[in-house]
Length: 614
Image 1: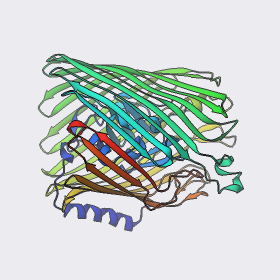
Image 2: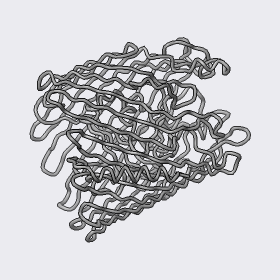
Image 3: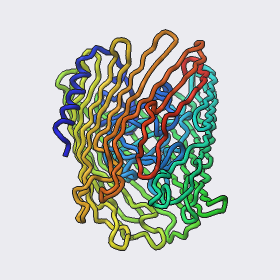
Image 4: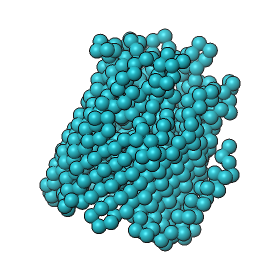
């Protein structure tokens, strides 16, 4: 259970924010992901966080996972530094319970069921939208905990070059360059980046009783290299018709501690390609057609000798129709198609499956009441049909204060590994299912924005393991949580704070019932403070997590921790900036996955050329 002291801390955070004098642009922030339609965050009935390019650069985030760290309700585990496997736990759900999109295209490995956040080059990212809470009624499988959509740089405006060069701890070098522009009807962006680091020994070498760190003994540096490129462009053919295409690619090598059975290096490729056509067919009817392909390719080696290969290709297409029924009333009808294919050195008995779906959504306003209804039917080649739905209601107590309530069902399709991996998979697995409930209140007082949300998610048919370690639908989970968010400006400082309290409880029938779900902390908090002083900008981020466990039995405890990051930027000229960051300034020793080390005190210096501030 969540203790009363934690509830008091969260309530106090909201009251503190409401007492401050501030100017914040959060109500003007637009998101697309929550309802598959353009909507401001202040009007959305979903819990949404938007991380734009300006925030990425202000916080000097050097990776997607670093940009995501501290999002309310979002926990991360990492296997030892840059490029190492990173898992995202959104509102306490499993790491494969979050749907990940890049420019609207579904990404991730169909074998594992997760996306490789660590391999997405942050230099090519324009914006990240995080929607917390179930979204299967719009997107189908995987969106139990929510949706994370990453948008690449779009371009537009005057022809504008950009470049940056960084150097830091562990022999890290990071370079990026690009150009964007457009005219009255067109827009484009092209960019490239290269990151490499010698890294550090990812494994805890002090665990000698376990045969060395991570159960192997390879006390060496675990490096990482990533080269990325992006191209995006569009053209408005007429006042009612426009087209757009996009491509993102990253490739490189990741080194880690392993064995002849599990490899110790991987050559990887991640790429996403897609296109979209938007047509204003009638004044009240807007139609879009989109399609694309994503690939997750990995060749694995041990001491340079080939070990295994796992390649995923996901092809998708969508047809969406938005109808303006009247002022403040919108109906959305659409259809999605997805085809997953794998090619592996391992002999999977089934190597492909497809999914077809239809969905509908209504958004309406009746006086001070807002209503959103959605339903979707998925027909999957492997497990048949599945229906999900959602309902959200909001009421404005006054123009700057609103309460909301919502319910949503969701499901997660079993992965190819769970279904078909030789001598392990179970082809009779059923989808994992969930029901989520949420209550929230949000407001703006004296230009201060704050929100407080409480939720509960019940998950059934969770895939666990029987006595023979074969996957079966036996487990259940109940997750309760609270999120408090506030942002303001005080005495020239831009302040943003959030606190998340979580009770992720295993409700399965075995001896682990009532235990804390692994790798989820019960308490997470972040505070950011930034200030401009003439040509200088200074800032800090304080992030903390409570203890967590690394296993279902709750035997292996991972201690809580607090890290402090410091950052400084100096505008040499209008277009040139010198930046410096000191991460984990207090050199806190901590782990987010058992036996895998996180970096100690480390620094980075960046020179950035960005005409017009971009």
